[in-house]
Length: 330
Image (tube, rainbow, N blue to C red; front, side, top):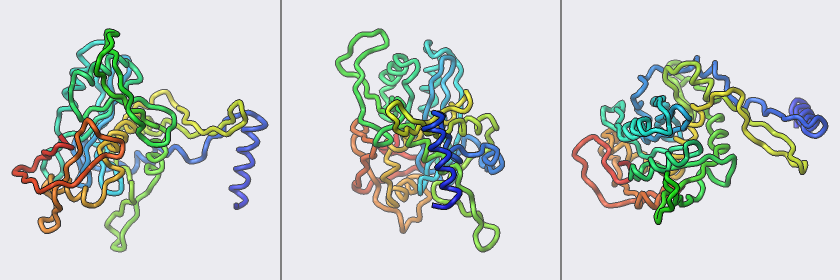
């Protein structure tokens, strides 16, 4: 342990034990101003070439629903495609109709192909019964009802059945709600946000590290929302150190939407993807080299989807159009 690290550890211990104060972990929240400087020029609403798995996540508030669309690629690199704010009282039907329209949309990939969402995660922590009713009525296997929890052994927990309608009537067959360990997603996201680019030996080509987060020309408010929380350590009443995330500013919807989109990507199989899965997605987009195109993949029944994804190989399937048309991306 070097002198600087030892000093920081001593201060942390003193603040937690002697003063009873919370210790903020240094460097956990990225600098939003640096993110502002490194924004990229790809058009908002389009999917860049490296984005192969398209997912979304929504955060519900009293007067609006905010939704982010993210694309993931090899090495869990990610691209923000767009962020929308759907205004409307979430106790009324109109804003939910707008959300339903958003989920059924398709986005244009840089290859020219169109892409639907593979999964979409909807937070049910606020306007819970309205959110349940929306998921139940949509009958869309891509749509997941989720609820954030501070911690857990895995990003997505075992789903729990919900059998109460918006009117309070017990239902024989209810929807399933997945718990999302938000701390896991936030720590991974912040680690990736702090990564920086490098330059190849030619002095011109930019090299992006594994897991790099690509951002278009979004405004400063959105970036501040992404960096709105800090990981802190405090002592509980039993004297044990507890790490928890705390908001440093009021607005953090952009971060929440990413967390839910990341959960949607996990449900689609992101964490288990191998090269053959990425090749299959490229093949469906029409950008895989013909001599390297692998046999297509087929998912298990979407209603039986697990946090690990559940992808399996199948026989050859023919596609006549450059539009994603498969059971696990439809």
